[in-house]
Amino acid sequence: MPAVVIGQHDDNTSPNTHDFDLAVQGGRTFAALEVTAAVDPELLKFWKVLDGRGKRWIEPSIAGGWAVSVRPDASVKKLRAELPGFLGALEQVPPLYGRDILDTDPGFAKIADSLGVLGAHQAGTNYPGSIYVMPELPTERTGGCVPQTGDALSTWIGEWTACPSRLDNLTKLARAAAVEHHLFVIVAGLAGTAPFEVNDILMRPGAPPPAVAPNLPDEVTHVWVMSTWSGGRGFRWSPDAGWGTFANDADIDAAAVLGCLC
Image (cartoon, rainbow, N blue to C red; front, side):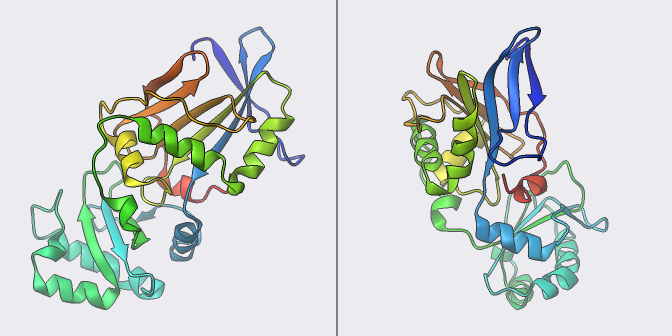
């Protein structure tokens, strides 16, 4: 949004206050902006128990970039103590990027079972030593058909925004005196609530924007959606211009989003 100035509105002194004001430099505020995250509360709880500081798990002794899925009954204490060494051993069996070694080595699979690990996948990362541990996700979030259009994003964001759990966000925007009410939604890549077809649109380079308008609540006039994945693009919708895209180059910390109770 060229020439638009963003100012902090919520200073934590009063409830039901939106996060930011948008204004053209030298002009009056024309929009209220509320930022929120699409995060599974159970995964958020697990993440906080695993690392009570709510920060990214970094182990300097390993290369990192690990996404590890575990059984819901996996011991957090055992994972904290033994998982880094296990992943370090996996890293000694190249090449690992893009595949799951547990599918090919019975010895590693036995150790994984004792830890409650269901799968371990390594990919390139900007955070050396990083480990992301999540309980097993529902299948509809981890795989499916790749959509040929972006319409699934429009349908999902309309339904998600209208959920009762979004009442706090909608109340804040409803109280704003600005003409435009913007909702900015960050979809957590590893712990988000979006289905696979929506995650695919958000993280796939060149994915097409939706061709249909979202069915948004009256409190929301504009919507922005992006994921915490390093690839893909963000998508925005306005009643005047319809759907458009923006660069997803903010390098959002997924761990910070997981700790967000927006």
